[in-house]
Image: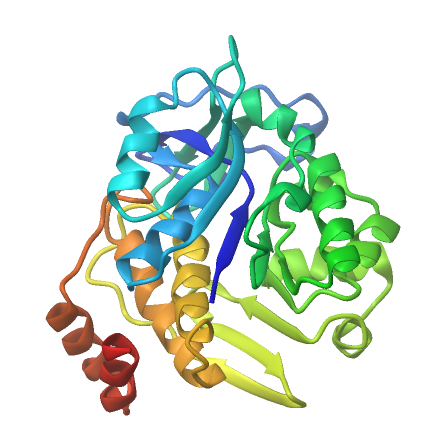
Length: 319
C-alpha cells in the first residue's frame, strides 16, 4: 500500500523542567498568568507529525512518501529521511523561510507546555494531492496549515482516495462545521481522548454520531491504552509498559506509524493496535521523536512479553 503523509515538518526544541507545572499555576490568577520556567536541558531534534509517522513506517519496512513545505534549513533533514527509505520528492523548499519549529517544555509528571512556529508550513496550501503521481492508496492528513488540511481532505473526496483525518493540535483553530465536514467521508479518524472530547463539544456529535461520518475511529488514551472502533466492534489495546519515561513527544505519531504499517499489509485491527502500542513506547523511553531503533529480534521479543500471538507479528515482518 502506497501511503502519502501530509502534515507538519519541524525541528523540535525539547526542554525539561525539574518541577511540576501544576505547582506554579495560581487558578485565581489565570487571567493574568505570567510564568517563565528555568529548564534543565534543551535538545534540537528532527520532528513534525508527518515525518515522525513516516519514520516508524520505515522502521517496520514500509516505503512512505512525504508531502510538505519545508524551509531553507531542510537539507540535512532531507538527507536523513532519504537514508531511512522515506520518499521526500514532494517536500517543497520555500526559499528564505525556515522550517517550522516546535518548542516543548515537559515537567516531572510528563505534563507539557508547547508553542509552534509554522515557518514554511504556512505555505502548505500551495501544494495539491492532484500533483502526486502515482495516486496514493491512502493519504494521512495530519496537523498542518488549516487551509491545506481543508484542501487535502476535499481533494481526497474528489479523487476518491481514502484518507486518515488526524486534526490533533489544529483542533483549537478549527470550527465545529469544519471538523465535521472533513471528518465526514474519512476512512479513519485518529485522536486522543482529550481531542475526542473537544471534537464532540465543537460538533455536538457523540461516538455513535461520529461513526456515522467516518468508518474507523481510533482513540488513544495515554497510560490507559487505545480503543479502536471498527466493523461495529470495540477493540481495546493496552499499553506496553515502559522501562523509563524520558519524553512523551511523538508517542502518538509512532502509534499511528505502527498501526498503519500493519494496516497496509491487511492485518486485523488487534494486531494493528498492538504494533502501534509497541512502536509508541520506544519513543517514550528516549528524547527525540526519530532517535529510536530496534532490530527485528528485539521488536519480536518485546512483543512476546506483552501480547499473545507473536507468530502473527513474525508473519507481518516477513511479508
